[in-house]
Structure formats: structure tokens, C-alpha cells
Image (tube, rainbow, N blue to C red; front, top):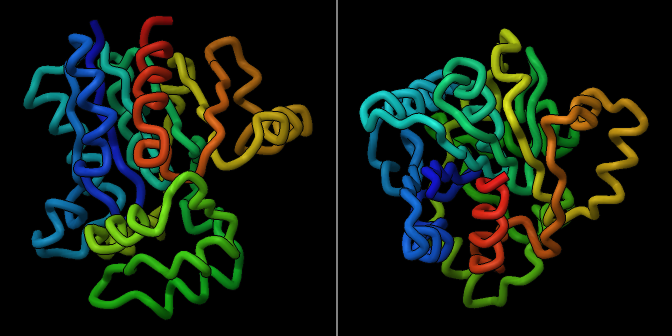
Length: 244
């Protein structure tokens, strides 16, 4: 059996993993679904949290619970803190899984991945150091798919979403390369795996490393929130990757 640490992307908390964590636990796995500082179930925590705070929080979980041989799952913007965690504690990690996400490179930030107009809109929308969830229409224009989620599901996400600390997307990730050789996996949901392979072949700086033997590439066609649109299939795929 495996130990999973499930890290949600921007604006959502541990609650988003409920329907993924349940079947994993029923199968005998240990599952830690987290909310990062200032987000989700921890939205009431005060402070202008940055990327380093989120990395330290994940590291603290592994130490506090004495976790090792962990499968860490990064959804969307969680690529930054999870990438930092893998770089600092590779000895505790079995595999990193990027769920409709991907690894950042040294010196980059999630902000760098956004289109210029979205960068400007995001900066203008920050209130008290935190960025609220944009409209679904605007996210769709930026390429964030809501496929697989009906109106009720979207309304539920919005009602439970919380503004995300701006430092988490602004701050640059510093890597030493210590975690680069870890087994890793990309699960492509809202974009076809064929597109990923094209970017790998073209030597795109964010994808070139995925050609290595330590990478597994998988496809789970749905929208950007597979833990909500296809939770059972997400759980099954995570269990499969953990067993490799």
C-alpha cells in the first residue's frame, strides 16, 4: 500500500480531494489531503503567504507525520510548492505526479506561465494580498477547461473557493536539482497527450525533461479539475502510478 499527499491547486482546499481520497483509503492506502496556508480550510489564517511558506508547510507535514516513500500529487498551481518539496526532501518521496499540471524550472514562477493579459488582470484583482477565483468565462478564455462539471458542480466550487495568496504565483521557485531524478508522472487532462509529446520533442524548456526514463505520461480526458469531474478514475490512475 502507498502513502499519498494530495495538494490542490489555486483557490481550492483539501475538500476537493474527498471523492479521490475515499476510494484510495478504502483500498488500504494512507492519504493526506492538504490545504495550504491561507487557502481552503485554512483561509482564515492571517498573513501574506508566499511560495516558501507553502513549501515549508508541506515539508512540515512529512516531518511531523514521519512520512517516507510518499507519492505527492500536485494539481495545477501546486506544481510550485510540490516541486520545491521534491527538491528539498527527495529522500522521502517515491514519486511526484503532476495532475493537469507540470514542473516548473529553476527561477520560474506560475505567473510566468500566464498570458500577459491574464497577468495584468490578476494583479489588478488582488485584494489584501490574495487573488479571488476569476469567472469561469475568463478562465475558459485562458485555456482552463471546465469540461465534466455541470452548473451545480461549478456553483459548488465557487461557493467553497477562497482567494489564493498572491505570493504563491508571483514567487520564483529555486531548485538545486536534487529532486530531478525522482520518478515522476504527468497526467494530462484538459490538453491532449499528443500535444505534450510535441512539446517534448521540440525541446520546450518546461517539457524537455519529460523525455527521461524516470517519467511516465498518462492521459485522463476531462477538464482541469479531474478530482471533481472524474474522481474514481483519478483515484484508480494514482494507484496505478504508485504501484510502478
